[in-house]
Image (cartoon, rainbow over all chains, first blue to last red; front, side, top):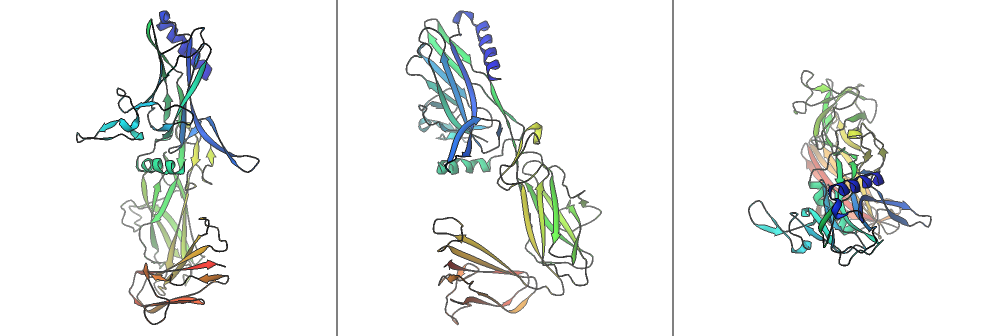
Length: 157
Length: 305
């Protein structure tokens, strides 16, 4: 399913903007859930598995995987993910650099620096529930043939 | 990790849960800028279907001791669909012995706590209509005497999600709303309420004893050193003179000095200075004359030896 959809997305981009040669860059996203299982030594192992059955209150990890399939490095890359409806942002996933977040889709920054307008016209400090977009600016170009993964944690409302 | 969990679960409880069967779609974008300009590439859309969480609550709407008398008595109950999908619930009610019999379970349409055959609708096969998430349903369990003397002391009513029930996490594939999977939540999709019963003639006080255990490691395992808190709840349907609660300290346990309370107020272990006394053999509390429809609660603690 993922492969077929990815192929379709790339094809559409290629038709829409043939001059820009969107081909070398690919990206796929996955929604994963934590699965706990008992290991033979008695410990509990937590693994991420594709989200199939998710109930309100369950935690989800959204993974963005990108790759440069071309022969030259690509710089100034930005990966962005609007937080889906009915999902609340929680935190960056372990091992992923801190993203910029936004509470309006326009202004990005660290969550601690963002404010939200309240119905009475005042503002208050933004919380994780307010986050509408998550964004990473890659600090270095993606080398030819290289890629990576970024992820954030969320919860189903 | 658990602290983070607690912090974000609390607001989730207050907000409405996402409906079962809803689809959550995620699309990310990748933007690259070079000499030719900026290009943006959408990712594949990835989607999941929200499962139906099955949860239910069943409670009493009052605390009175109900007398099973000729003509029948209605026990009012409140059922709440605590899940996130449209769900029906199956109800079963059983008296503690055969001296009383359940005539029917009905929806209390006018909410007056009394059964009126012209207004209130009996449930077919004990199953409620489908309830919206968060919806409440007022129910009446109508009981009749089945013997000359009603000796049943309790009525136990149980509600189960019609889709299924079982330990939290039990899955019923594709049985949820919109073809989603259904999964039991923290209530196991089952709720039970025990209602004390009496008769007009006896209107005997009911003493309900419950216990909670706290072990040195913070668990509820009844191990040596664990503290057991006993709670004795005396419910008086009728006015009662010179009532007294006494309870021996169980073998293998030791009374915790100074742990005796009546209605949350501390009592001394010495006799004669207040209503209570406690020693290694047992505790006793003089309640004196108690008015009708009163509940008095005594607690004390022991440690497991």
